[in-house]
Length: 58
Image (cartoon, rainbow, N blue to C red; front, side, top):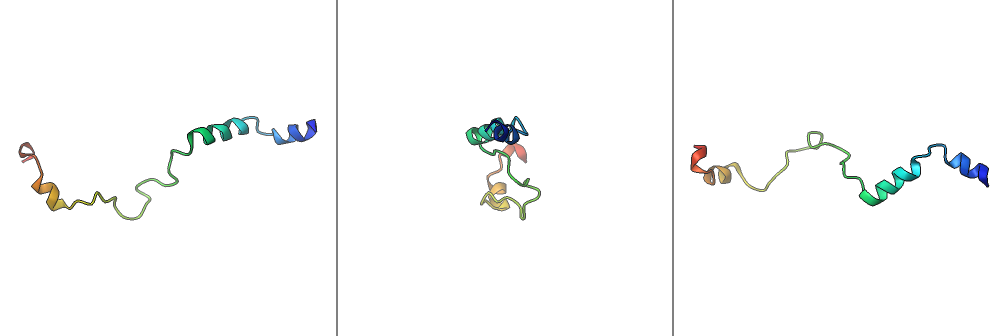
């Protein structure tokens, strides 16, 4: 039985990494925003931003 455990512990940190992943999850997306298709949409048009621009941004 000890031989099986020793063989399974080829990477001694695998349990720790798995536990950290279980607790914190994967907070990094698989792709970055520049790799995704299309620009992110806020649902507001450029016209809306221009109408709601503060006066000091002339």
